Length: 327
Image (cartoon, rainbow, N blue to C red; front, top):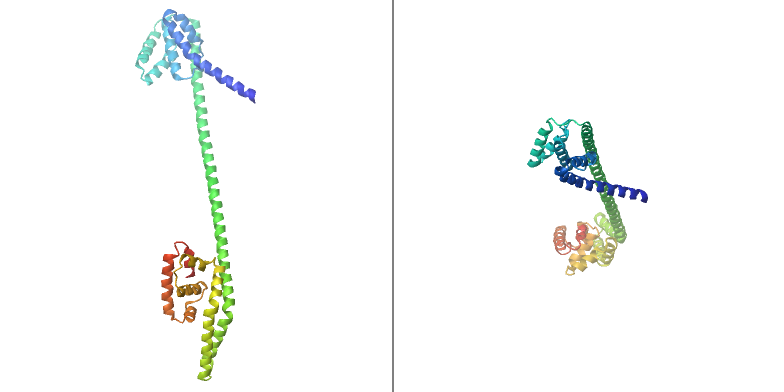
């Protein structure tokens, strides 16, 4: 593998050395053009035109070659070589070289000596020029193919990266959805536990109250009997208010992530009667039940709920927005 790398490096250096030697050969031929035109033509014939690197070098060679042919009074069988210079310098607006090439073309058509060897060399250079054009065309095709390949590779990398990012986003969304589902399930579990504990806590008292109420409305006893039932119902309601409030508060905090404790910490100025109303609301009691426990009309309970909600929204929700869930 290392030997192959050395071969490639040597090949590149050799190609660069040959490329750098081409302009010096042209310079030498141009220097000899006046003093020894035969030697200048020989040097120009010595260059392999098919290996020249760019069209500017080709045009310069063609102009010097045509000039050497004219100076040596050698007949040019075609106009191919001089036309190379005419086309290049005309397209690049190099007027001096362009007009010089036109003059050489006119002189090449004069009656010069028809040397067989010179003609063969000329045709050989012409063939090398066509090989140069074919090489340039292949290089352009290869370059275009490489550009397309790089673009395709870039598109593939971009698409893979995009798919990777999309996969990551989907994974994040799935994780969030799973977390949200777990939160919902946990919240549902909290609600179920709250309902179960409160039901157990209040079941016996409200069952007794309900039984006494049914007895009150159905009994045909004396006023004294009815009054005794009413007093017992009132006593039970007072017992719920006094004995069960702390248990209800603890149950709500246990099941709803200490929601009442957080309200106390954020809003310590909350009035005791409003806090009691909040405990009943968080326990899931209906407005009618709360009306019975607080001894107030249901219309007053609705108004108190509305005022309490406004206060909590102002004081507590900026820090703990979940508090409004009790309403």
